Image (tube, rainbow, N blue to C red):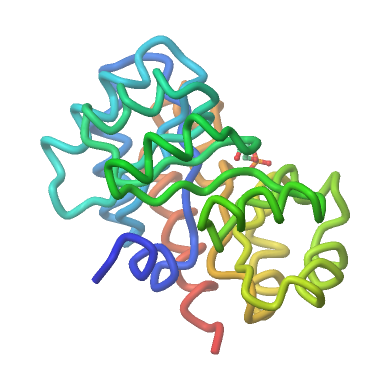
Length: 210
Ligand code: 3PG
């Protein structure tokens, strides 16, 4: 199964922020126990690259990607650390090139028609729609899907267990990203049991989509 097929099959991408490197393993294990073996580890903290390396090495069955990738240098570091997909808050031509050369899926943040056309020009047909709740949510995605018939979306930002089913019911949405099951407060409190529970709840919601 390709990386994009796996993301679609799981339907949910946890957006992970690791402040303390020692949290990497228990956090990955909580996601695995919650049947959510995917993590977008974001370049918002100094230890992101190391966390990607640890997660990829220790959990080969887990789909580990990098998030908040803004520069080509970050993309290279992430891929060399083992990231299997790259997510960015916006589109970067240089990140796109790095990913294309290394045959790694790039999910750039695109919320306007022009940004989507830019991604299409680079051969990308799946985009992150971020921050989803701010840029019009499902209504905006449906409006954009009308002219862009081949484009698929991964809404992220403001997604939760309460609206996940509604997003996933729209066929052009392959998956949703979000941090609600790996919220900062839960990681800080090392509340792995709650992370596992929320991960599993998200997976159960995603499974019900048809
Ligand atoms: C992201 O970078 O994708 C977001 O921070 C995730 O948004 P959320 O925290 O609203 O889930």
